[in-house]
Length: 469
Image (cartoon, rainbow, N blue to C red; front, side, top):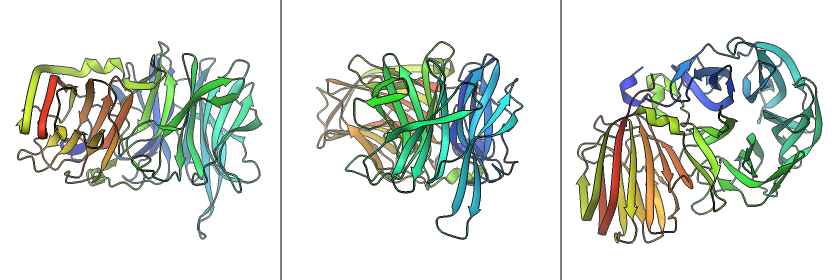
């Protein structure tokens, strides 16, 4: 493995092989546990296991033995995604057992059941078998999310009914072993959505957030540009019923974000981790023996304006080193090399929008020494949007993603750069853009630029982020 090229410094990634959905996020026995969909034998999707890492602080992660391996008739073709819950000092893993019944037809006929595995030490797991069979009319039936409700335990599942389409199904239990179907928890009137994957219900202050990853949602202008989406509805929840108070929103607007899952930290914060890749995306890191990374853990909150916000966990600051600060950068009709590395770095850039007049202005990141290769993060005044453009990168995605430029006089961009990724958090986390990048250079330079006018950066902070290892 060529670790110096694209292997992350502070993001969770497989030591070898493939990673996709985060699973079973939980705090147990004084440690944080992250499981993930994992194919250990090759850097491509295959026979799904549950990989496993643990941490004392959500920053420094240590690999553990594989937690779940396909070994039984009911999960022989994959231990698919699921969740975790702690009860009476026992860690419960809920997952989908996947079996291919007939792959000689298109689409293949499959059977998916919900399964349980338990552990007293968080390392060795004992399978307890099938706990829920699929109801009549459902073939795609997966990704259980379990939580403790007021009087019992609840589970929601992603499903596709043979005639009604995408649904979330609600089950209840008194003991986590015996489950009863309650109702259809959520449906959509969108005819293009055929499946909801990886559902999650987050309770944040007095709000409820129903999060999932719809499949089939068609692009609409600047929105829904990825193959599949990940997003949420804000609303209220009580007694097994969720009521939306706002329309569906994308959780992240970058090129690579899917299957986010949440858990509650030891101090009560709601934390979300997502898969920072996308199905069918170009993944050049496979040549180095691995594919797939997870985002940094993000703190979820609802701000005073009623907007969902997400920001990197505060613990990430322990990786900062070599801090530098520049103020009052004024640039007109040109580019200024800032002579800062972006290979593993945190950048906080504050832009004065009242004094920025350029048609396009922003930052070049992960750039080659001659700035022929770069990722561009910039304001486009002509359409009032903030763009993340990867069309000048040598590998990976080759187009752009964008969000409307937030209202106000100032724009703050918090940017996390790693060896093959970037995560951008806008104005205290009211929006995020996450993308994989595969620079074909070792310089990873950074510059400011302004086209046809002036860029005013009031403050630019840069810190090298140390490796978590």
